[in-house]
Length: 118
Image (cartoon, rainbow, N blue to C red; front, top):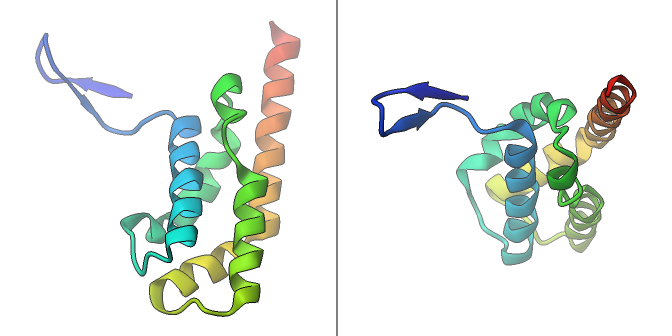
């Protein structure tokens, strides 16, 4: 949603949930592979879970590599070489894996209903 600031500029308050979720997943995968100790989005797991059911832009949703993220989480935990904020982030995602999958399914159901109503 954008709030009008002037006739030539808009201030972005928050991007569409599908795009936000795609960025979160993409950056999480990247941080796991590069073992980034801390990134600001590590504190956004709850927001991710809240936004994921509303990630309903079909063509963008297809780009969300959720299964790749879940595999990377399991693999990183199996390796056992994470620490600090990255470990806490990965552990929180792992602990909430079923919630993530449930939120994804809710989004799928919303997309199906939107298709039926068209």
